[in-house]
Image (cartoon, rainbow, N blue to C red; front, side, top):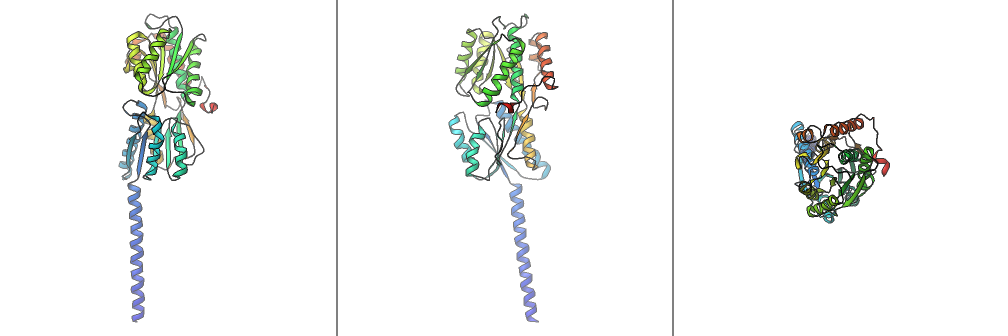
Length: 357
């Protein structure tokens, strides 16, 4: 009898231990699930880049909403890497080395190349990168905008403006010269944006001359001003700046000398009313929110590369701004809106960006 009681006692103790271990594992797992960490890596500075501001806002709101709707306690850390591109790789590596973040969100065409060696060293680290294209790595998922369409619209707007003889288009001149000022040369710029810009302009008038200039970095406003001043002196009357903080130099020079700006990435009309003739905006905040939410819900396919476009609603031509409605000729606005509608409705189909890589 005593032996039987002892066996029962031992079995009882074992059961208690097993239950305690299961509860401990469950509690630890639950705590780990509820306190998962994520990072947003900003390759630049938020203050000088609408694209990065939209990235941070979108992911931040996705975390807040998911926590509220699912009773989780997900945490987010935002890291600004600064304007020195030589430091981006080491800073991104440092984030992964912490082994703290389930996923690092970022946005820039150059980030996949920086992330690739990191995935070799830290095979558990995942990356979701917007405004970039890379496929085949099980740790990386990318989503990019169809900047072929976006650049085409910017070029078409520039072409309409430089060829306009309407008195309301007061900064147009007869020389039919436009320009693109880029921060740097990189594959997306050389293979997609610049050709799309040229194609859009020449769809208006094949005799339009397109000049391409490089700042050399993403922050030098003085260099941006210097280049735009030289272009104006050559007869250029429309400039598309895609050069980060250096674009501020282009804006200030446009106001000083009098030439038009075709704007990229966000609503730029308020930056220089009467000078900015078009804004083709990337809906980065919307995309960041949706992609982050899909990841939280387990719906992101790593190793994939997705492209979103005008038809999807992730690239829009800003048409409801008073500075667009009031400052330019009706003929200019009507032709630009018509071309936008043709792309949106797939009446005009441009080459897919995939065909250039």
